[in-house]
Each structure stands twice: as structure tokens, then as C-alpha cells.
Image (cartoon, rainbow, N blue to C red):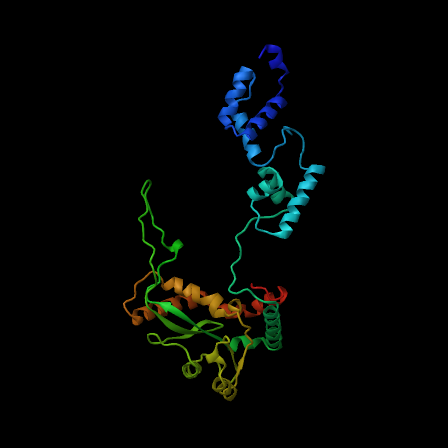
Length: 350
């Protein structure tokens, strides 16, 4: 190509040439080599060619440079904002890459619109125990409203409240990932640990909490499960050791498991001046034992192979003593707050 022809080959022509060869399937290096062959020293650098090819790969085939000035406003930007806003109204699962590919908007522009214009942040999905139906959400609101009304009539009732629930505990619970940390010197590699295939033998633990912390627990013998007679015996032992003033009515918060709702249990409650807080189904976030005890307790005693249940009981006793002393197990105090949040969120999980 003669000098006059080269001089007429402006930068926009180079961008069009890059776009043509990109669509033809040439690689970045092939495109740059052809530009150099034609234009010599007047050709774009390889870095510039790479930048334009990446732009085309991101779905933006506009060959205008758009440098200088504020490009965050104007008809084109408003249209892009509207398109992305509408996409998020349909689904919140879009990635920047998928937005760019779907609508032909550069990924960097998608990021600027999403974060600065729409003021959105990306977070992991929230895992919930159960997909609540509208009826179940309404039940959660009604029960929480009734509990709040009862609590506000006499707030001292919380002092006489005991929450009861059951869970399985394992004689060998591996440490959680963030607990398996090691101190290493510079350049030293951490040791590898095989992920265990399964936990050790497990037994059922029945636990009770009051406003001060964990007040009572029992561990059933191997492979025993909770039934109504066993639950009644547990309640009797618990009330005999109840630290509060038994002249006052005791308020129990347990779940809707079948052994908890038999006629014999209900009759015994009536005979012993025991009232029940309402507990909606599928609501571990409203049960102090679930949201304020079980995970923390299991985490604290985990990472040890216990030879038998007695060794595990010693570890549980020690953790309860420490946890009650430092206020780790006072979830019963948070019940009014949980009920109020449930009402305000119209029954959504907290």
C-alpha cells in the first residue's frame, strides 16, 4: 500500500478492519499481524488490538472510542439502565457476563449501571428451612401476634418461660472448616485432612433453656427416640429442678411434634398450671433452642472422638457452664424481638 493510501486509513478504519477480521474468526495476533503488514508503524499496537477484540467478545460491537467527558448520562445510557432494571425485575440471578451477552452491553458498563445507578450488591441466596406457603406465613404472623399480645400483658412471663426441643448429637462430629486452621511458617504448606464419610454414632439429646441459659438436658440411651411417656417423664424431672418460683405459672415453648401434643401431655399441663406459647409449624427461627443453642453447642463439642456418651456429657457440661456464664445461651430473651420481626416481615423467615 502506498503512503497516500496508508495516510487515508484512519483509526476508525482500523477499528472496522479489526471488527471484520474478528467476525471472520481471526485471533488477536493474526489481526495485529495483518494490520502491521498493511500499515507498518501506523498500525495499532498489539495491546490496542487485544482491547478491541475483548470488547467485541463482551458483546459490544460499537467501534466508536467514546473517550473523554461524562458518558454516564444520555439517551443510550438511559435505555441501557431501563433494560437492565427490567431484567432484574424478572430475575435476580443475572451475572454481569450474562447481562452483557444478552443485551450487547459491555460488562464494565453493566457493572457501573448495576452498582452505581441501580445501587445493587451481589449476595448469596438465603437458605431457608422450608418453602413457606401463604397459609403458613399467615399462621406465623397470627401466632407471633398472639404471643406478643400475651407478653405485653405481663412481661414477667418471659422470666417463667422454658423452651424445650430435641436434637441428635454425634459421638464424633468433625470440626467445621473454619475451625480446622493451622499456624504455619512462611513457605510451609498446610497438612491435608481427608473429609470424613460420615459422623460417628448419634444419640438424641433433649434440652431446655430459660431466660438465664441452658437449664436442663438429658441424653437418651442408644437409638432411643422421643415418645409421649418419655416426654412426660422429662417434663416432671425438669419441673422438679426448675430454678424459678413454681408458685407462678410456667410457660413452655415446644414444637408441634406428635409426642408434645398428646392428650396426656395437655392434661398434665392443665393440672400443673403450665401454659404454652404458640409455636407455628416450620419455624425453627422462632425456637430459641434452634436459633440460639444447638449449632453453637455442637460446634463447641465437635472435633473430638468421644469413647462413650459419658465423655461427651462431660464436654457438654463444661460448655454449658462456660456458655451460661458468658451469656451465649440467652436466646429466650430474644423471643419478643423475633415475634415482632416475624409480624413486620409478614411471616417471612428471619
